[in-house]
Amino acid sequence: MALRAVDDAAPEPGFLQIARQLRQEIRSGAYPPGSKLPSETELTRTFGVARMTVRGGIAELRSEGLVVSEQGRGVFVRARPPVRRLAADRFARRHRDAGRAAFLAEADQVGSTPAVDEVVVDTAGAPDRVASLLGVEGDVLRRSRRYLLDGQPVETAVSYIPLDLAQGTKIADLDTGPGGIYARLEELGHELAHFTEEVGARMPTPAERERLQLTAGVPVITLLRTAYDTAGRAVEVCDTVKSAQSYVLEYLVDAT
Image (cartoon, rainbow, N blue to C red; front, side):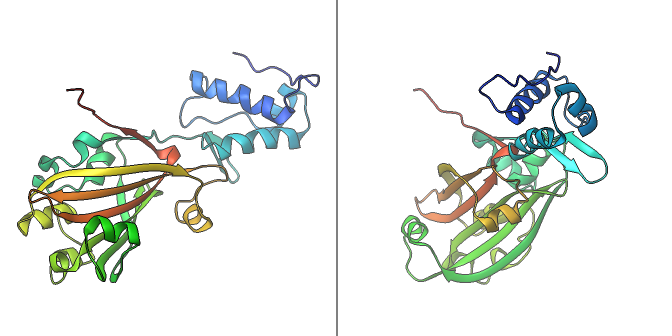
């Protein structure tokens, strides 16, 4: 679809007409991931509108996470594909046996370089929902961190582990070692049996928007995961906030 001039008689505001046409072009592949959109001057001429109207259309696409603006270079279609998070595979034991935590396996899938920063380990009281899931009272070990792909934050996570399992072990260290928390739990005799996940979506708080470097209008996915060992004990609850533009959640559901 070729870009066409804004229709002043249409009920849709001009900036939304521009956003809609550019969105269709991006999704059709006319502007592939990583490509540069026409300049403001070119778009102003193409659409026959004022520069501020063009800027409004670009701002709309930026708020949807479709494009990013680079100072002095222009506007580019977001290059990184979303991570397809396959719940049936990400916690498979073979990843832990290979010394790889789930996030590393996901990063490999999209060919990105993973990183973890803002790691904080302390003891604290668990939120009521978490305490109920863990079946504990009082303090737990809390591990907070942020995950990045190619330098871009994509999620934050806070794990809560009962103190009798974690205190004095590698789980309480900043670096838990190959395979992460779950590998250490299994080494301690708590073989993992299954997980439950509660998934939601909402708009981010100001602090979350800053930590995940989200543009206005981009929501987050919330995911509360509980890990159970073969004895049926809840050994960890992880409260995760994900950039919605960075993830596709995929679940395998048995129909039998």
